[in-house]
Length: 160
Image (tube, rainbow, N blue to C red; front, side, top):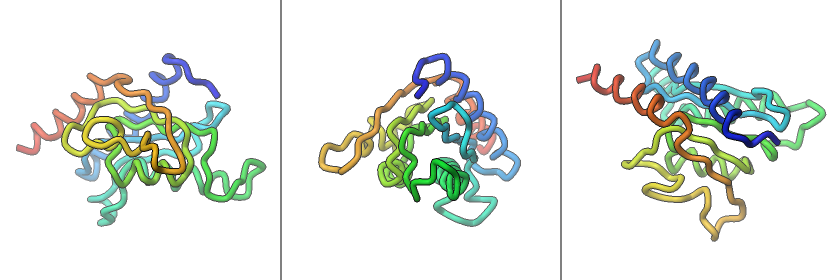
């Protein structure tokens, strides 16, 4: 698995594209991609709660569902497990999304901006590295942090 900072920055660019796409439906601009062990994007998504009326349609969940669907029936099909994949997301995952990462067995999460109000990957909670759970995730925070944070700040500034 490719795990260097240059790839993290490149993959974050793809997540930022997804985040910008969420703006078309007035969703909070958060984007995510799931990258396979070969560096190929298996799933991608932006927040879609407003677009779909689904409270679970966070960018991470959309991307995880797409990646699992892409692997279904492939040579790498291991059911629902996304082992050897990396989730790249523009904002620190919340408790729901961090729980989904653990349940999907994703071993690495790369994120951009910290979420001091609802983050569950090291700020408010640390679900991804909770020793009482059966799966732990390596966390790479702060990748293109300023760019990710400014996209969110601009969205909320415009909402006021």
